[in-house]
Length: 543
Image (cartoon, rainbow, N blue to C red; front, side):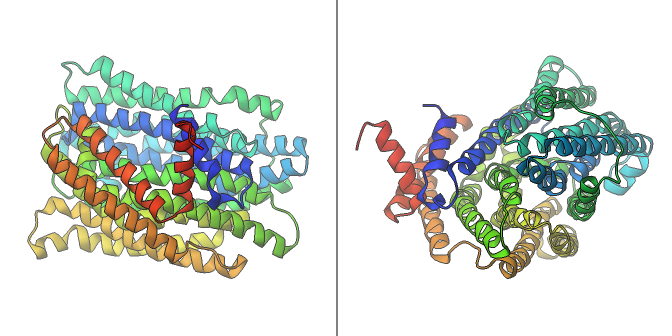
C-alpha cells in the first residue's frame, strides 16, 4: 500500500471522525493528497531555487516581485471563490438545477476574466509605482530588475485566477484531486526552467528565465483542468449576466470576502515592506520560512476546510438541524487538524534546523542561512495552530452565508499585525541589542499573536451561532505532551548521529520523531493514534 493509501486509511478510520460520513472523510483525503503532492513539488522547486540563488539580491528580487502579482491571485483566487461561488453553485447542484448552475458558472467565469484582464494590464503599466509601495528599500539595478519581473509575472497571476475558478467547479462536483494536484505542473515548469538554464548563467539572467517559466507553468495549471470542467458543466457559455439572481448572490458574497482577503494580503505586504528595509537576505529568508510554515496549514487545515465547505453549504433543514450538522463536522475537523498541526509546531521549533537544511542547504544556501531561516520559522509557529484552525471556523461562517463577520475579524488581525510588526522588526532589535536582520523573526512572531486574537473572535462568534464548537482542553494537552516527549528524544538522537548529510540526518531524526509521537499518543489512548496503530497491525497481519 502506498503513502497516499496509508493517509487515506488514517483519515477515514479515526474514531474521532465518526460523526462525519465516510464520503466526507474521503474528500478530505483527496484534498490532502493533492496538496501534499503540490507542496512536495513546491519544496523541490524551492530547493532548486535556493541552490542557484541562496539569499542573494536576485533571490530578494524574485520573492518581492512574486508577491505583487500574487496579490491578484490571492484577491480573486481560491479562498475568495470558495467562500462566494462554491456555496451558491453547490446549492444549485444539490437541488438538481444543473442548467442554472451552468449559467451561473459561465457568468462568474466571464466576470472574472474581464476584471482580471483589466487588473493585469494595470499591473504591468504601474509596476514602477507598485515597487515603491511594496519594496521601497530596493534601489538601482535591484529595483529595475524587480520591475521587469513584476511585468513578466502579472499575466501568470491572471491565469492562476482562472485556475481557482476551475477549482471551484471541480470541488462542487466533489472532484478534489485534480484541482489540488494541478499546481504540480506549475512547480515542474519552474524547476525545468532553472535546471535547463542554470549552469554557468548569471543570477540576474537566470531569475528572468525563472519568471517566464512561472508564467508557462500557470498556463499548464489551467489547461490540465479545463477538459474535466467542460465535461462537468456540459459546455460553457460565457455571459456578463450579472443581474441574474444567483450571480448577484455570488457577487454579494464575493465583495466582503474580497475585502477580507485584501486586508489579509495587506498584512503580508506590510511584512514584505518592512523586510525590504532590513539587510540583504531578509525578504528571501522570510519567503523560505513561509513555504515551510504554510505546509501544515495547507495540508491539514485547507484539506479539511475545503472538503467540508461544499458539504456544509448543502446542509438543509430547520435552523437547529443545520446547526447540529455544522457542529458535528466542525468538531470532528478541529480535532483532526489539532492532532496533526501540534506536532508540526513542535517539529519546527525543536527540529527546524534539520528540516531547513534537508530542503534548502545546497550551493549558495549555507549553514548560516539554515540557522537564519530556522529562527524565522520558529517565530512563525506562534500562530500556526490558530491560523490552521481558523480556516475551518471561517468555512463555518461561509456555509452559513455569512462573509462579513470574518471580514471584521480579519481587519482586527491586520491592524494588530501592522502595529506589532513595525515595533518588532525595526526598533526592537536595536533596543535589545541584536542584529537588525533578526527583525524579520519579529515580524512572524507579531503575526502569530494577531492570529490568536482573530482565532478567539472567530470561535466566540461561531459558538453563538451554532453552539459549543472547539478542541477539548484535555485532548489538546495530551497532543502537546506527545509532541514534546517525541521532540526531546529526537533532539537527543540528533546529537548522537549529527555527523551525516542533511537529507540522511533528516530522514533519521524525523522518522524517530514521528514514530515516538504516535507511540506516546497511543499510550495516552488518543483515538487518532489508535487508528494509525490499527492500520500498522493490519499491515503486519496481526489481529
